[in-house]
Image (cartoon, rainbow, N blue to C red; front, side, top):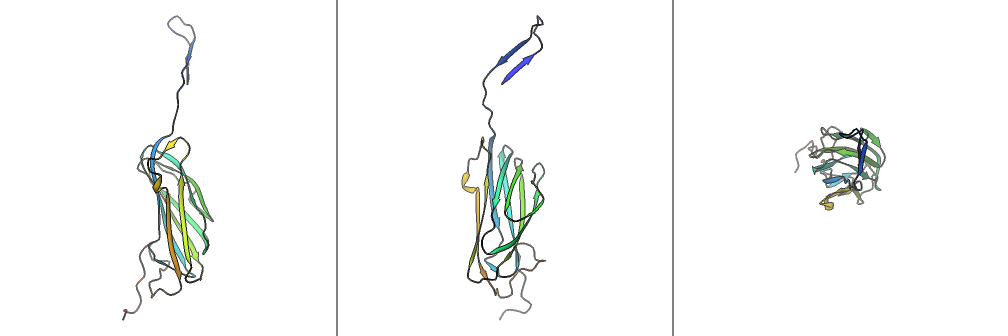
Length: 178
């Protein structure tokens, strides 16, 4: 770090140099991923919610990754951020790989939509992960990866979600169950 000024009391220029280490601070960031389903109806569109949170005390940027796993296609996503936080882009398609900025106490949310292949008895394992830039310390690295694994099915007893059903709320069957 170098500081200088035009002159001192005798109007003589002066400067000084002192070594300092500048770090990125500490940010307790975490990622979660869920769809609130135990079975993915084959051939339908399903939504997942990915949330990246920063408990602070410092704001930071993180790289969020969520590759497209086997069993899914038409991978699309939208992003929204709390005040002081920021998405890199609001919408996208294909594998999710975005650098986002998260304020202390902030949240960045992605709503991911994909089409499930019609292959019963297979599983879809989705892994979202976050990576901090060098110089930023995270006291809990154990919550920087989130996994959601679901089996693919063709028949779900009428509990398949519809496009108008909010994430996590199944549609009820038309007729009463026996």
